[in-house]
Length: 414
Image (cartoon, rainbow, N blue to C red; front, side):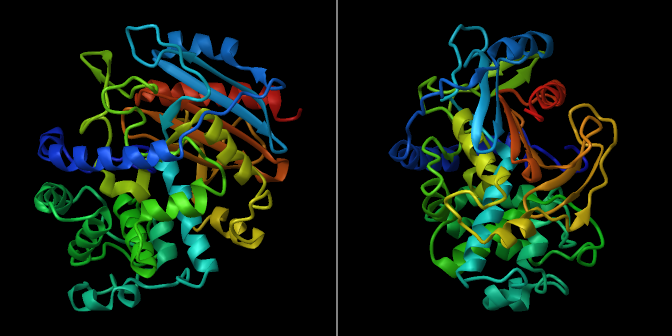
């Protein structure tokens, strides 16, 4: 959400992306191996109603290469379908087992990982930066050291916005750090960022911060001695059987084995093969690097619709309530197509109100500017909807809003 809860992650300009070429290629190829280890495709349940006839008109009306959606009720996918093509200009049908990039919907995964580490006693919600990184305390500006894990995850820390000049400088400099693992790079970025002045007192101003999630990821890496990616695979992907889940571009290098992300160039969607320009640098992982199939996204939504009580119980139910309870109000542009009218940010989730539902949703959207996803959950009803597409336009967001309303009215009371 530009200017509010930005669904896309855009720290840097296209010029700087060129400088990240080697860095991204190295890590994309590294992560591809991890993806393939846990990769599998599910069989669509025969009892699920097909949404394909509903979805096909959306591709044509909103200019989408592909779209997928699923409706989940009481732990079961009651409707699912896809429409469109993996690559604009070619007829390569998309299926429910195809991987889409989920963008900032990754944040709920990062927040759940934080909750697991809190449950294990490795962190507390009020763990402070200066406490986890005492060696950096002398370089932290006043107020920076007292920022907590919870404040980072709720965008309520008072840190400066991502768009300050230091951000692009850091992404340019990281190209020279050829001996780093991702966890090393996240630590280095955080060590530079903490020298910035704090913009506001905690919980006084909402400021959507992808850098805040990188820092939260760095905290988890510091207390565990393992990378955020390793922790996510072990503690979330494997227990929840998210077999298609991985990091970075959703397709494999040199292959169209997933719906390709699309940029709009000269008014037309341009498919982007896996490479340095098909996603943001993997260092931003905790803020938004995950991809997974429509079926696995539905599985993830189902677990959350069960309010954390559905097996496997990764955290106590009370902790799930904390993850979804609003911490700070979000200044949303009411009436904008595809987005909530109002809401409050929790931990990786938004408590969002839409005009077509009497009850709020536990909701988030996500985009790397080349893909878009939205996830709607109502735990009281044990109900969820997921929508995924492989283009990042505002029209795609508008399409998702219209489709969500249509699906909710048809299936929410079944």
